[in-house]
Image (cartoon, rainbow, N blue to C red; front, side):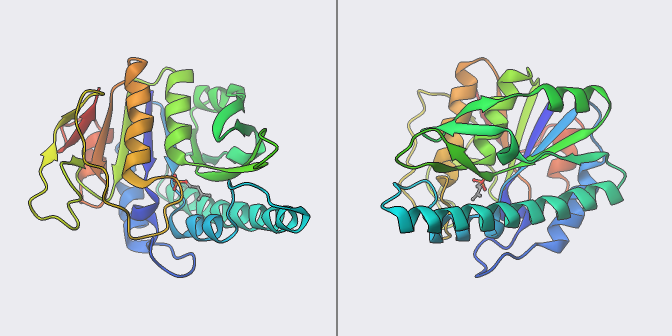
Length: 262
Ligand code: IP8
């Protein structure tokens, strides 16, 4: 079984002021995904459909008082509806290409504790897979057992690493907007070199910050999730989903430029 994460930056215009889909990329990515040749779960990021609201409503930060609680409840509703809307567009596009995409809403069955998944029953996902569907999940705003914060932003990266372990994935691919992990931020430093293989002993300079509002930690958050997965014996690969043909090659088992995390 293969799991692929489609970065929110590939599917949406991430630094837009309001939720904006990247129609051209979505069309191309959906086309490329039709080359999959084994069971597949897709998880996508939120991009401008989630991070703007999550930051504005400070979901995941301490609830200060009753008014802040009410405001965060409003923020939860707005964020969930927005990422659900993105998921609808992704699923519709996949279905139009002939992929049996079934929407699975993470906030309806996942609860976190201190922002890490604590409750997540995978029975339904397993059943859909067994019946030949392609489950499509996404980064979402969820309930959190920690009473001080009450709510959390759950990244698609955490969902993918959790499910990869639970469901014994053979292959985990993260389609990002860069070729992989670099010695420095390739968008700001032209001398940055691609690192082909990362382990927990690799020294990384991850101090460069993202320019857009990524509340789940950008590349640093991604690497930490993947190193945790590697610790459990599951190797993953970061590839550039914006380069035409990369996703197609990755889902059909061909070699693609990127970083392997093991
Ligand atoms: O884009 C974040 O998911 P990610 C989810 O996978 C929200 O980090 C709601 C901002």
